[in-house]
Length: 334
Image (tube, rainbow, N blue to C red):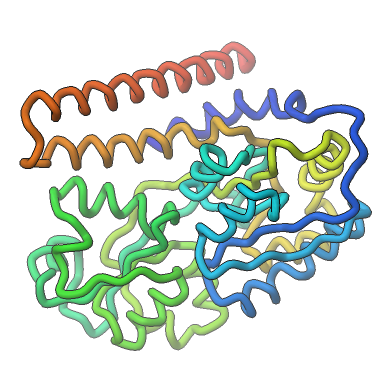
């Protein structure tokens, strides 16, 4: 599913330049939303240099907004309290669909990779070594799931680990809780929970910031590659502000000092993107819903088929759009 993303984005990014409005005065200040992958203090240390450069280069005051969960940033954008935000793909989908958001840029990994991986981790001393072990012993295990709006912490493992195995993460374990990537990893490392969701970017950071904790973890499952995170602005931002942001993000990271700032965030330079980045994530969400409906014994045969037909129609629409973008990219490359 995810392996088509590069070809799709290569085509969709070409239209990014046309999405900015015209001739409206730029804002004097912006609020930048940051999703809660770890503690606010840790995030502030990482983000302050980047936001300071954004302020200097755009001429606008940039205010950081941290919320205790992903929904807080999404709601902030919905009510025009957050102007620009870093989201995961799942949270970006919610922001685009429900909060007037629009993708304009995408992060890239410091290594040059176009994405990252969802992980399931257990303590290194645990007898749980893979998903089969976890599912067989689930009734005796505690599980730290991710934020419901997290791509790698919730959506991806929710489909590949649980839906495909026809089990519900909320009921299969002795106890299930939801937390940030950092909280989940530390809880597993400290043997407060048995298994938790995490991701490869978080693991790389933990190996730097708390190597003794990272050493207590073992990976029991790794997902397919997940598209790198998007940057989202309010669709109703004025054209001049969008132009300033676009210029900043598309040029940032060329200078050595800027590269160091991005490296602290584990990123390379940004690339242009659009809402089409979310197409494979939308597919994944629909596949997950389809699996849940197909295995729901409480639905009548007629109701089940009607719901499945509706999802199949949505999937067909997504597949058509992805094929169009892929075809456009192939023509431009030839």
